Image 1 (spheres, rainbow, N blue to C red):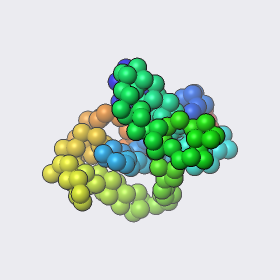
Image 2 (cartoon, one colour):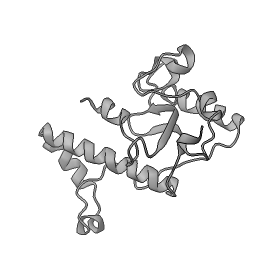
Image 3 (tube, rainbow, N blue to C red):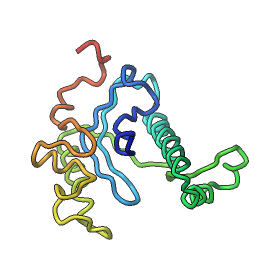
Image 4 (cartoon, helix red, strand yellow):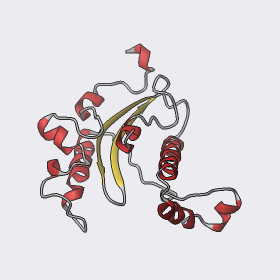
Length: 172
């Protein structure tokens, strides 16, 4: 199974039947990622806990894959990133920064501003990975311009807006 397939099936530490996650857009950059995600049935967990679990499960899968490939060089690098206090507590690898930045999207203007910012990210700044947003493979931009799903399936943000995320999945 390819890593993109594994990420598609990632459900932030809970079986799909227990947690409904709606991904509206994404871009994966060489050293960071952006996504617009709407959660339903958070089971009382904070966004920090949900994303932390997601990152943890991604790391488990990544480390397993690197071990299967006998990729000692990258495993050694990831081991070297663990700080001494974390090593004492048994942490073996450091893949992600310890924090992340999230914004609550409460109105259409803000959501569309984030859509433009996220999709234009590969075309600006240091990386300049594509001339146009829909040309970048690791992005949902092509879905928004052509309707064709990319590496990760997304729901159009207008479709997500029509979902009452406060109700359990079975009540709709």
